[in-house]
Image: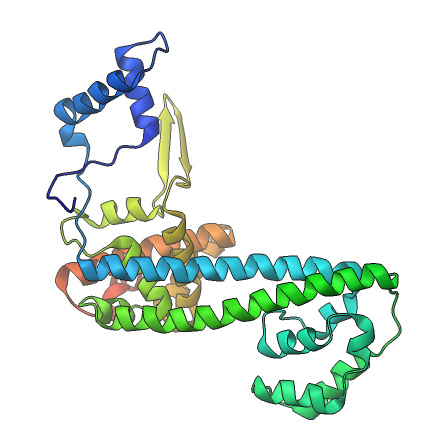
Length: 333
C-alpha cells in the first residue's frame, strides 16, 4: 500500500471456498493458491473491496489506541492473577481492597504482602497511602482497614506464605508499572485524538470520551470512501445482525465475525450513552420492554449509534439529540 499498489484483503475462509470451486480433491500448493487469488480479483473484483487508505494521523491514532487498550487488558489479567494468589493465602486482603489495581491498595500490598506484615501496618502508614490516593473519609477507612487486616484468620505455613508473598510482591510491581504506562500512553492517545480533523464530531457523540472516541475513530478509520452507506459501516462494526433463511425457516443472529476491539469499544459506548442521551435511554428501554436481553439491547443500541455517527461524518455536523432521535420521537407520539 505504501508503494501505491491496490490491495485486497480476502478472508482465508473465502479462499478455502474458492479453492473448492476449482478442485474438490483437496490438493493444495502455493502456486495453485497464487493463481486462485489472482482469479478471485480478476473474476469477482466487484464483490471485494480494496483496503481503505487511512491518513497518517488515523494510522498513528489507531496504533496508540490499540496499545493503550492492550495494556488495560494486560492489567486486568494481572489483577486476576493477584486476586487468585490472595484468595489462596490472604483472603482478608480481598475484603480490605475491593479494587486491587487502585494506588492505595498496591502501595499497602507492596509494604505488607502477607497477613503478618499487614497486621503490623500502623495508622500512619495506612493514612498516608489513602491520602496519596486522594481518598475521602480517611480516618474512617483507616479504622476499617486496620480492623480487617488485624482480625483472626486462617493462615498457611510460614514457608508457603513466604512463597505467596513473593508472588504478590511481583504482581504488585507489575500492576504499578502498568498503571504508570497506561496513564502516560493515555495522554499520548488524547494528544493524537485532539489533533485529528474528525475529533470534534466523535467527541460530540453521547457517551464517547477522549479515550473511547479515539478507539472508535482508530478502528473505523477516516477514509471517506471506505463505507458506501450506514449499513456498510454497521456491517464492519459487527453490530448489524445476519439473517439465515431457507424455505420457510428464517433466523436472525448476532454477527460474531467482527473486529473484536471495535466491538468492545462500541459496547462500552452504548453503555455510556445511556447516561448522556435521553434518546438512547428511551431506545434501550424500548428494547428491554420487548423482553430483549441486556447485551442484545446494547448491541442494537450500538447499531443505532453507529448509524447516527455515519450521518454526522457524512454531513460533517456535530451530534444533535433532537435530529438523531427524531424518527423514534415521531413513532412514540
